[in-house]
Image: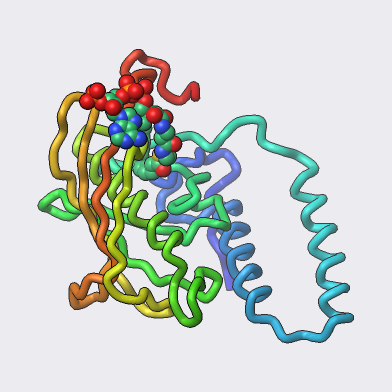
Length: 218
Ligand SMILES: CCCCCCCCCCCCCCCC(=O)SCCNC(=O)CCNC(=O)[C@H](O)C(C)(C)COP(=O)(O)OP(=O)(O)OC[C@H]1O[C@@H](n2cnc3c(N)ncnc32)[C@H](O)[C@@H]1OP(=O)(O)O
């Protein structure tokens, strides 16, 4: 198999690097696969001890050179915030699903997703906090695309049905309105046929500090 990488000189902006995954994207996906494998492994104890030692050596290799700055925040052509280090969407963050969202013609944020067993809360179901994290993100994106980017002030959730993992689902969000520095959005995680599983409304507040021109300094 030939893997075409973005070159070392490419920026971290996926648009600038085209559709080619960077080496960091591939490492990140490999670590996600590793985490999935850890949750499900049944290999014997002595092999677990060996694997742990190998992973400790790899961890040391990665720590040999550490970033001194955060991954930058950028906006794609549709206005959706992109941040490689983000906990939900980050292409360079193994903890992220990652969630890939787009803006539909009517301004809705839409992301197709599938949770994994690592997201389990109640047996066979996704943890409610994980669903909340996804909804916080897509509601925040809906507000950002509408021009009112902010921090979450309140997020209200209604868990309607259990959320399965390992099945295709859809997260959507719509901007509702803005009053001063406050913007509202609503959204949901649903089955592909539209059956709602979790519904959310959120208030996002543009911090006074951002309007004073010190965005990103917090
Ligand atoms: C410039 C370019 C930037 C680009 C940027 C892109 C961003 C791209 C986003 C992508 C999507 C991410 C989506 C995930 C977003 C998170 O996960 S954010 C993390 C979770 N949230 C937080 O950590 C917020 C913590 N809280 C805070 O930092 C501050 O309390 C806040 C919310 C920024 C407000 O601080 P402030 O600007 O000093 O506001 P303040 O003047 O006290 O209050 C303003 C108004 O809001 C009300 N208010 C304040 N806090 C609250 C609250 N929690 N609940 C209800 N009302 C409140 C006040 O009562 C006041 O109301 P009015 O009197 O005007 O009617």
